[in-house]
Amino acid sequence: MIRRCGRLLHKTKVRSHCPTEELRDFGLPNATWNKNLKDLYNKFLELSKNGSWKRIPSHNTIAHHLQGIGKRMFLRNLDSDGLGFEYCMFYNKDERRMVCLFQPGPYLEGPPGYAHGGCIATIIDSTAGAGAVYTCGSVMTANLNITYFKPVPLGCTLFVDSHVDKIEGRKVYSSCHIQSYDGVILHAEASALFIKANH
Ligand SMILES: CCCCCCCCCCCC(=O)SCCNC(=O)CCNC(=O)[C@H](O)C(C)(C)COP(=O)(O)OP(=O)(O)OC[C@H]1O[C@@H](n2cnc3c(N)ncnc32)[C@H](O)[C@@H]1OP(=O)(O)O
Image (tube, rainbow, N blue to C red; front, side, top):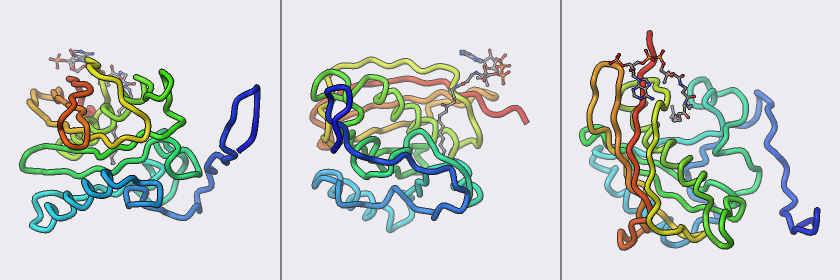
């Protein structure tokens, strides 16, 4: 830890842009995952055995996803595990559903002890966006509407559940719910419009 401007910061390096950086799948469990995240992960691994669900690999760049080389990506931009967006996704093609198991780390703090609303928006956009990508190919987010019901404690486990509801030409309409890992608390819900790439 280092002290800067009177605040304690973790001494952490920003990931490099080096194209030869080793390819790592960040969607696999690491030591910072709490029990609820690991339990949910194992549950979806089990559901994946019959092929209905598929674990989505997660690298630190889009280019890594596509070619195995590239630069840094927003959600995966810290060297240390557990500080920011700790998550993994699973996709169900038949249900057009992408779920994300998410543990917000201390760098995502907004109100003291709770996640910033912008990071909730980010994980919704990324989950529903990935669901749209896996269902229809490349998309851009055109509209994202979120209702926040309950604050999200840092370090908790969230179940982010997105669904492609309707496809009209290039327009992809999705919905998303963010719940506690056990489904007891509904933290937020959202609707999104994605536009398919024009090619
Ligand atoms: C691989 C691993 C996983 C990888 C996982 C990756 C997940 C990615 C998720 C994150 C995605 C992002 O953050 S994306 C970054 C944030 N978003 C952006 O920066 C987008 C900025 N906006 C744009 O670039 C543009 O406006 C577009 C691309 C959205 C649309 O432009 P366009 O391509 O020229 O299309 P355009 O003709 O305008 O619109 C097409 C149709 O959509 C409608 N339309 C367009 N925008 C809207 C709108 N906001 N609300 C209603 N309707 C709209 C139009 O009326 C039209 O309807 P009709 O006449 O056909 O009926």
